[in-house]
Every structure is written in structure tokens, then in C-alpha cells.
Length: 283
Image 1 (cartoon, rainbow, N blue to C red):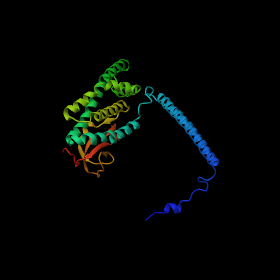
Image 2 (cartoon, rainbow, N blue to C red):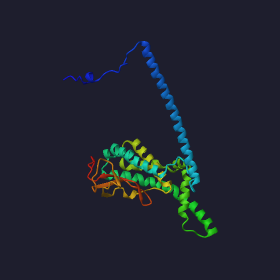
Image 3 (cartoon, one colour):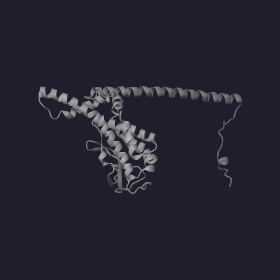
Image 4 (cartoon, rainbow, N blue to C red):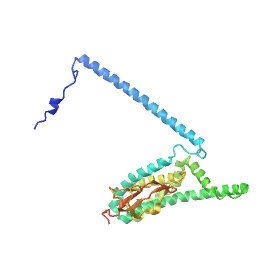
């Protein structure tokens, strides 16, 4: 049946394509002028927005200088809430991609757990091996000086580490590059054991993971990944876990693929979990 709804119900505006050619040219000219005005207004707003952003960055810098211990903190280093957001985004994007595009195609559940656990443990070791000697040397010197002047203070080590972390934030990108010189070894170790394809995706995943773990380590207070929980079975809790595939019912049995992240005892980012009954092609 032919639909005449549009014909019957649509009426043209009174001036729709009416008028002489000169009148139409005049209308087009008015529209073009309005368009130019709109473009100029947009450019002005864009410049004002950029100016406001610069003012905000300057205010952040001034505030850091006013707060004790923050003077050496780079304004580009992510704050705690930005770090937790980046972790959540990483779990939902990069972890999701490598899980479905690489791991589920070639590995069983045991292999998938091994991949995530080994990647995090090796990167964590790289970070600790880089910073531990540095922390120890600086703390030993400071404690020696303090013990001479005011006697031995057992509680000073924590504040020293906090100050050191803030000082690292001022040029954290350069320190990260030095710290991760041996990151390629992690990829080689994983490949030697698992023989995975799509090496580029694996490399991108490890680069992003190492960056996040590094930033969490020098954050003050530092954010802690519960790496030992990877591979553990537990009941799903939507306040503490995020499912990597679909929906999980509350208290449904699941397995942890990526750990929760904590600041002291407070959970800052949910762990990434998979239903224990999830069907894999290679199981």
C-alpha cells in the first residue's frame, strides 16, 4: 500500500524556493554571513577554552607549590583518581582486546591465567629491582645523618619514601624509559612458553600495563596491585569485580584474571574476572 503520509502532512514554508533569483542570492548571502559569524564565535570560544586550560594548569602548579611535599610534582603526572580511571579503562579496553583477539584463540584457562599473572609479576619485579637499590642508598644516608644529629628515628623511613616518590614524579617519563629498558624480556619469556601470535598486540598490552604499574608505584600514596590473587576462584561481587565477558550473577563462581588495586586497605579499582564455567575452545 502506498504511503501518502509525507505528501498529505508536509507543507512547505511560505518562502521555500520562492522569489526571484536576486532574492534567492540575497537569502544565500545572509546565510553565508551567519555561517561566518558562527565560525568566528567558535574560534573565539576555542581560544578562550585554551586560555582557561592554561590558567587551570597554572593554578594546579601553584597549589602544588603551596602544599608541603608537592613542589617537585609534575603537573602532568596523573592524580590518584586519574590513575584509577586509567586502570579501569585499561581493564575494559586493552585487557578485553587481548583476551578475545589473542588469548581465547590459542590458550586454555590455565594458559590465560599464566599470561596475565606472569606479565604482571615480571613487570613488578622490573620496577622493584630498579627502585629498591636507589631507595635503600638514599634512606641509609638520610638515616645516618639523622641518627648523628637527633638520634635514631625508626618512623622516618615512610615519610622519606613519600618525598622520594614525589620527586620522581617531576620527570617520571624519563625515569620510566630507564626503568623499562628490559621490558622486551617479558615478551620474550611469555613467547618462549606460550608461542602466541599477534605479537604487536602483546607488545602494546605490555607497554600500557608497565606504564600504569610504574605510575601507581611512584604515586603517593602508592597504589598496590594484588597480583597474588590472579587465578583465584571466588564468588562474584559486583562491588569488587568486573566481568570481562557478559554478565555474572551475584555469588556466581568466577576466576580473577586481573587483580584489584588498593590504596592501603581501600579498593580503588575492581578486579577483572571471568565466569569459571566459561567455555574456551582450547579447554
